[in-house]
Amino acid sequence: MLKLSTALLGLLVLTACATTSEPSPSNPGTRQIHRNAVLHEGPELVAAVTYLQGKNSVAEERLILAVEITSPRGSGPNDVWRGDISIRTPDGRRLALISQNEFRKNFARMRIPVERTLEFLPLLYRYLPTRLPCDRWYLVPPPEMIAFDEIPINSSQTCSGPLVFSVPGGVQPGRWRLVIELEESRADIPFIIEIKD
Image 1 (cartoon, helix red, strand yellow):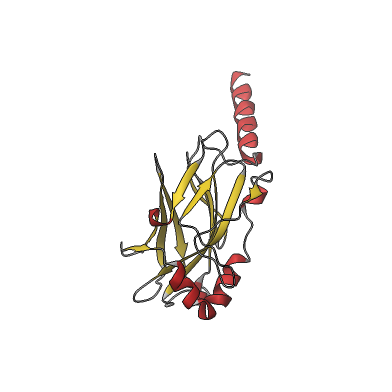
Image 2: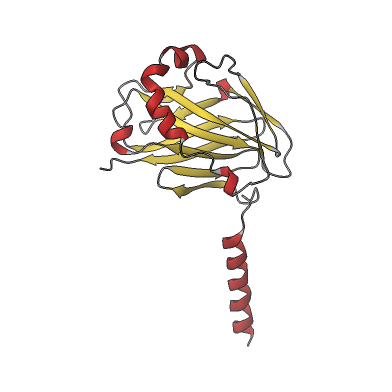
């Protein structure tokens, strides 16, 4: 009887974990939520990251991500600075976010892949439906004029937009990591770019 009770209790716990709709800051980490997207849940940051796979990104000179960021419930507000965002390539290089001037100057060539990547958003809405959108981002396409170097995040808003990194030698398949340095922690968000037809 005791074994049966223990088994039922375990089943209830698993069911509760499987049906939760809010990311849990007590279980930080990154998990795949779509073929082209991951969800990161950390103590200071919740982020959804989407990317193009295969022929759409491999060998391109720029890696384009669509990203949503917010604070987990119960954590205080935080500022995410442009200089604290970088990408780690499969071979270990650290690449910085391109500047707003470079983004604007090259936007005509990047427009279609940026728009295709942004089509995956919003993703966080299914986990955090009460969050409002914010009106700030690091890279803003023309004719918008104002891009920000600092994005204040909190648990009532979700900020989103493209992140673009110049990749000398071109994007290669493998394990990439988006890294965001925060005041008391680091969001290290891995994702895999594969070659698929």
